Every structure is written in structure tokens, then in C-alpha cells.
Amino acid sequence: MDSPLLPDYTVGYITQSSIILEFSPTIISLILAGKVGSNIASEIGTMRITEQIDALEIMGVNSLNYIVLPKIVASVLYFPVLVIFSMFLGMLGGFAALVISGLQSPETYVLGLRSWFEVYNVYYALTKTVAFGFIIVSVSSFYGYYVKGGSLDVGKASTKSVVTSSVVILIANFIITKLMLL
Picture 1 (cartoon, rainbow, N blue to C red):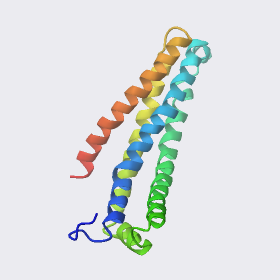
Picture 2: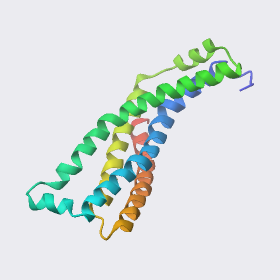
Picture 3: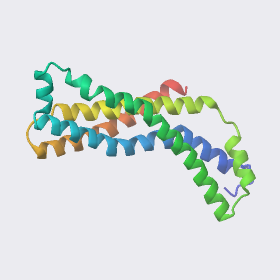
């Protein structure tokens, strides 16, 4: 960043753009796919193996609505909150790194954060996060719900759900970006 052609506030602007547009929604969703996705797949898979889902169906309860729907609603509502925290902490971390290193003044960094800020980018990031939350829970629930076998198969289903969720998130990221940022 020593080029005289770049303004001093470039570091803040690049931090703001990269965190809001890609890092927070995509990376946080990939992390959640590993943590939350494997948990959901193994929880529902264990319910299938121990015949708890069969018991619900015998009682006349729609097991998908009872087990999966609350998880989807919770993820669609809560994942954007996590991404907003991630955005805030990412920009605060950039500020702390800049102040500790002493490379620029805090005012220049804040000027870069505020330069060319578009609220639409935040809407775009939150839209991606909602889609990713739905993908994580639905893919993980699918693998857990339709597991067959024993406890080893639950572990395999959990691993497959994380891998599939991650790949689908990256593909969905590309598609949503093409649709929303033309």
C-alpha cells in the first residue's frame, strides 16, 4: 500500500468492502456448516437410528415439521445476527491492528470505512446469509433424516452433510452474487 497512486484511506475501504461483501457471510457460513451442520445431521441421524422418528410418525406427528422446521426458522433468523456481529468485529479488528501497528492514523482508517459505503451491500450480505442458513440446515437435516444403519453411518452422514453444505454454499454464493451484483 506504498503506492502514491492509492489514497491513504484505501486500507479502510478495502476492509469494509471485503468484510461486508464476502468474508463475513461466506466464511461464517462455512464455519457454521461445519459446526451446526454436523450437529444437526448427527442429532437427527441418532433420532432415526434410535427409532424416535418412527415413534413420532406412529403417533401421527409430521416428523419433518416437528424436527426440521424449527431448526430452519432459527437458522434463518439467527445466522444474520451472527454475520452482523462478524462484520462489526472484523472492522474493529482491522482498526485494532492498524492502531497497534501504527501504520496509519485511526481517522484515516475510519474515513476508509465510511468511504463509498452502500447500505445495499449489507442487504446483499444478509440475503446471502439467509440463503446459506437455509442450505446448511436443510442439507444437514436431509442427511440425518435419511440415515440408515448404525452409529458409524451417523458419523458418515454428518461428514457428508458438512461437505455437501460447503460445496452448495460456494455454488450459491456464486449464483447470488451474479444475480444481485450485476
